[in-house]
Length: 86
Length: 218
Image 1 (spheres, rainbow over the protein chains, first blue to last red):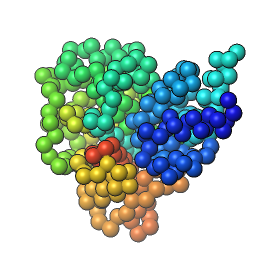
Image 2: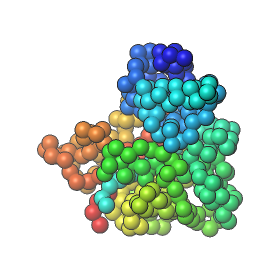
Image 3: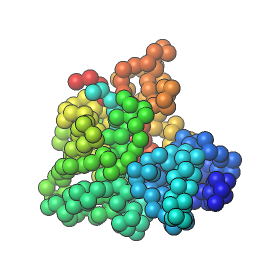
Image 4: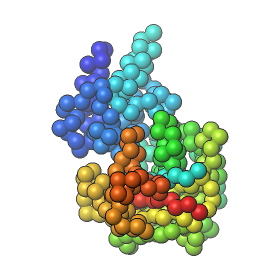
């Protein structure tokens, strides 16, 4: 999957947890999940669990703590998909 | 270490089924922490509430430390609650007030814990109601100058929550003509006459509940 494809899928994962749909429509790799999308930190674990299910990967919290903006989420997901394919 | 850290979790907003799944709670709790729920006294606290209690304690400790080191990341399992005490015969009360404020926690039915993160040790007091959990953290056990407040509001929109919690804190500060701003790292600070005050604050909101804490020197 390309980074753009992951980003498009990630939008769907994040969507239930943000009311800022306008910002969601125009997210880029620098978009911050908490500050820009106003996602409550209590939903961060939900996003990780949903991403795990969507991509059939496992993300432990040592990696998840980096998932603060869209670009770092794509980094982690992309790396996990790569490991799965090896 | 003078700082402030608090957190609020609205219990109406949590997903009970998901919280009880090991793949969910194992991202928040270590095995040692999971075992703490089996301590005598915690039988009246459902496991899903225990998970979010520890989340709120850990996030409060993170916010306390983040004010001093803005580059740290929030990894819940690295903020380990190694001791937690519940008042004997504790039962979840309902929150009948619109707002509640206090200085320190003497005489209140709080759950107290000790948290370790690297070489740092933190102490917490948590108030649990059927509706929400509020935790407040300090770097020592003296909460006598820890001011806190909880309020129910009519909107769950982020911008309104944010404005309401700021107004609530301003109303309860010992000094007037103070405004709340953010420093270059995005941490909330108090300004008076454009000068930053050395009073650390912490703000939180979740659904229809907001909470603040601030710490004065002991």
